Structures are given as C-alpha cells and as structure tokens.
Length: 258
Image (cartoon, rainbow, N blue to C red; front, side, top):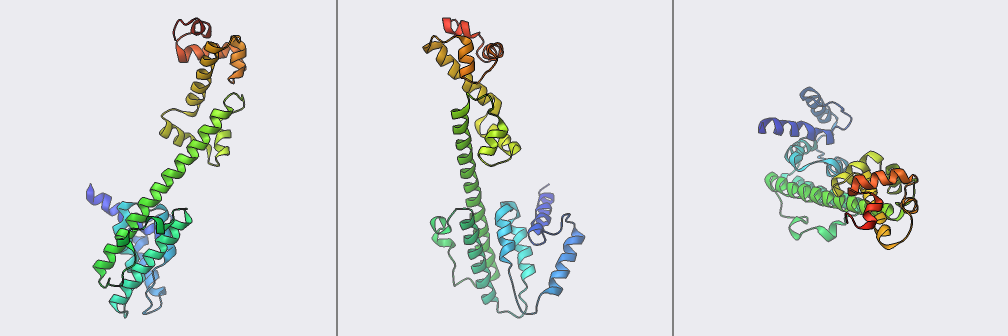
C-alpha cells in the first residue's frame, strides 16, 4: 500500500508541470518529458515559477518529493555550474513562494522564519533539495492556515447574517451563500462541518430559541410569536416547536417542560 500511494503521488505531481494533460499515465508522462527536453534551449536551465505557484495553490505535502524530482528534471542543468544552478533554484523557490503568499493575503515577510530566507552558501543538489522541500512545506502550511482563516471569516459573516435575518420568511441557504459569495453546495458542506448542524437545523434552532424567550417574557399570542420569528403558519410553528422542544408553545409558556 505505501508503494502504491507513493506512485500515485509521483504521477499526480506531474499535473503541475503539464496541466494540459487531463489524464495522466506513465506513457503520457514520458511523452511530456521527451517533448520538454527537445524544446528546451541548450545550456539554459529554467524553473518555471508559474508551475511552482500552481503547486503552491493546490499541491499537498505528500506530493512534494515527486514534484521536486519532476521540476529538477524539467529544468535541465547540462553545462551549467552546479553551485550556480543550486543558488538559482533556491532563489526561484523563495520568490515564487513570496509572490504566492502575497497573492492570498498572507504576507511572506510576516511569517518567514530566518532559516528559510535565501542563502548564498547552498551549493549542492542535496542542499538545494532540502531548502526547496522546506519552502514548499512551509508555504503549503501557511496556505492551509490562511484558507481555514478565510473559511472561518466567511462562516462568521454567514452566521451574523442568519442571526440578523432569521425572522424573514425568505431567508434560505441560497440567499446566505450568495451573501458570502460562495456556491450553495460549498456553503452547505462548510456550514455542516464547522457548526455541527445543517443550515436548516441552525435556522430552526435560532427561531425556536427566540420563540421560547418571547413565550417567557411577553404576553404575545402563539400565532404572533410564530410570525415574529419567521413562521407564517402558526400550526406549522406549533408542530416544529413540539418536535424541537418536546412540548407545545402553550405547555412551554405554562412552564411544563422548561
């Protein structure tokens, strides 16, 4: 099983070097290798920063080793002093990482440990590989952290919108998703995962909790409370209230099951 996983990661890592290939196989990878070797100018090593940024955007920690292998093979170092290429490689990795982090609002200078800043003394392939491994891993971790932060911000904005507009009959998952500018399907999955409830369960709970408060603290009729918390049908309100609370609104007001 570990060997199968390693092979899958190796093949998947090629998608950053040949994004035009929708279906990757060993044959298609070999074809890409030959094509890139023929097309490259002699004695001109090149690491495509856009490919590196592509990996930063969607690569995983498990793919790092294979990606570095493919990147080095695609660059070509024939006729170039090894120490020069190693320095070029590390600078390319550093600036590509910094540019990517800035693009997602995670400013590299604020999160970059001193040991990951470019070094002039990297002169061997092993040193370059080790440095690049650290750069890739650190950037992916920052990317994932920023993604989680942005997700929390979206969720907080969505919950704030629900808490403010729950009395409106027209509030819906689609409307809230539109408010935070993400797809309804993604919002539904994110909400359930982070909150531990579906959107409907959260909205219903919000409405019923407010109805309970009003039953305790006001003399409004049950039908008036139903309307005030977003139900336009008082019978349906009573049905949902009993399903959630285990008693009718009248029983709750009397204190039978508070």
